[in-house]
Length: 256
Length: 302
Image (cartoon, rainbow over all chains, first blue to last red; front, side, top):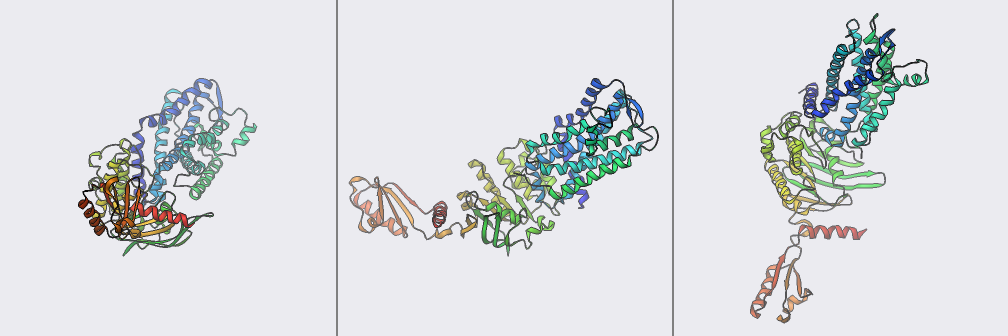
């Protein structure tokens, strides 16, 4: 039995368990939509400059919430779920079987990506129906690549974060504290008014900003390919650093 | 052939010596029990054998392999029941076993496994709905899924009520009948007594006694204790018995290495005189007596 087959088996059972917790599944998908509705209701008038043109603020939020949804489905979910799985002793049990460690990790990441894809479809459809956010066709390659790089990088960062989470109870607090400020600073919840503001300089140090910029370009560009090479490179570098840290410091046993 | 061979194993955490140089062998096809109080070094030793922990020094061989290498072929031949462990609560019993058995090259059928651990009726129940005892049996089921030659059971019945413990013992006897080697840790004397072919008592990181439960610590040759109540008007015990007797509140206690002879003398004397010996009791030392004797001796030596 190949290691890859085993990884797919992990995906299958993770998925089975995922849908059997309907409350969790429902809010995983409903949460980003709630944010989309709330932010457009609060700040959705006027236009903002995005990807070299002016778009309706409500349309802008479709792209922003898409970025947010991908980060939630990978970074947030993986970090919290893995912490709980670890505290429950499941990781240690897995470690005692002949399953290759990477098969398990890849399986978990693939499942997170699966959820991400579903979320993206829901948000894009919702945005097209209600907020005039056109589905990107000309820049589709850039859109897909940017999402893939983002999902992979934030998955790796989520796994890396688990090595500083002391126990599962602390995981939601730590995950939110690490990501929420960046979501605000990086122009996701509130569009950036002044690109030269100090907080943008801070945001540029972290991957969320670069992911948001790359997503906006891939979603809203009317000319060009929509690829943001530099942003993608920085995002990818963060992902690689996360993968290296996760490989080095990941703990399979409860950290108590 | 020995399934496990441990020589001069030492594990240090900073200045603390959790395991202070122990050696033992677990023969193939039997139940070997590590008996000792909490913090004696049982789990540390077992987890070194399972490959979860590194050792400071000494040698360990599990099925001919060094567990520190964490070789996957070795892991395919062992089954592990950890002291605290979990499975996904949203899967059913059968799904959980299926998930794990597929990780092994030569697994047992699901139906066979649920039967061995007595969960046939709970086959399609969600794991989250099982009782504590049933979940523990599922732990054993998952450990059995790959049809291992060697099973590690780390305190499999801690926290069980007496009925659940009997059930678990039944499962462990089933494993033995299947020809598995079982390495068990416990802090319950009766568990070691009932299940093990060989018991090692571990205290403060050292093995202080080892042998079959019936003869451990000289239990087979140790003195038998007779106890009875002697009525006030019965008069004195015959001379040879009186020498070894202690009397407290009318309760007489005699220890003897020849229980047959002593009992004959005592009852003969009592019948002749028409004396009733109330609450007459003949007791061989229990494993617990031996255990306390040994571990107290250890504490005294420090």
